[in-house]
Image (cartoon, one colour):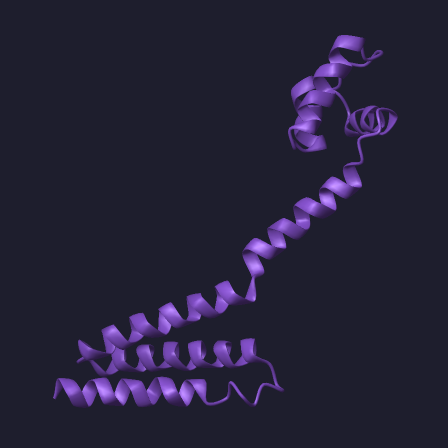
Length: 139
């Protein structure tokens, strides 16, 4: 529930400080028991561009969560872990699950490369050749 009534000078300063630390409008509004519209108006009146900050924050989030290099690295780690598990796999059902995981991982990696990357098309083939060489060396 909002406090209602005008926002005092001291309260406005505290609201601006909270916004400048990167807190969300909603979070600040809850803390000060004010409406989000009130918080946005205070920010606008004092020259604080929330839209720009929001776009920057969103871009940083997207970059950290959806970075292609990170996804490729994660897929590679999953395939390597699958390779380790394959050595100990002696149950047909586990083998089926493992092969399904490999297929999904390989397909995801292929999707990361994109349809026009002919140069990278041989990477998976090289991975399997390396696996065969390692298996032969262990035998």
